[in-house]
Length: 104
Image 1 (cartoon, rainbow, N blue to C red):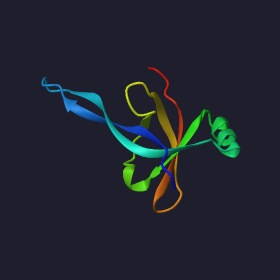
Image 2 (cartoon, rainbow, N blue to C red):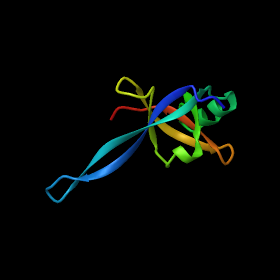
Image 3 (tube, one colour):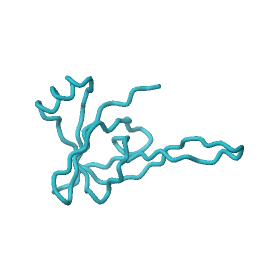
Image 4 (cartoon, rainbow, N blue to C red):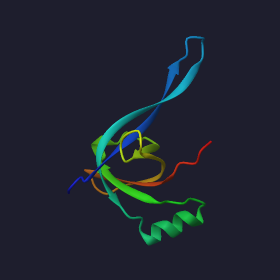
């Protein structure tokens, strides 16, 4: 498989704020990926559940650590996505089905 793209997997970690509390901070880890289209059946099933999948990425299973967000393309100018579903294809790759992150 050719890994043509890079994306940032985003982990959310809690950091001690020095005053007895914690704040959440995003940490980014760049990995190789292949961008794919959402399958038609995938789109309609997710849409029926109130989700709006836009894009899918395939990454190495060893590179994925249950992150729930990503940024594509990798770097400051990338767009953020929520990972709405994962699918383990085999022992080496996993598909990440994503929708655009909703601003809060």
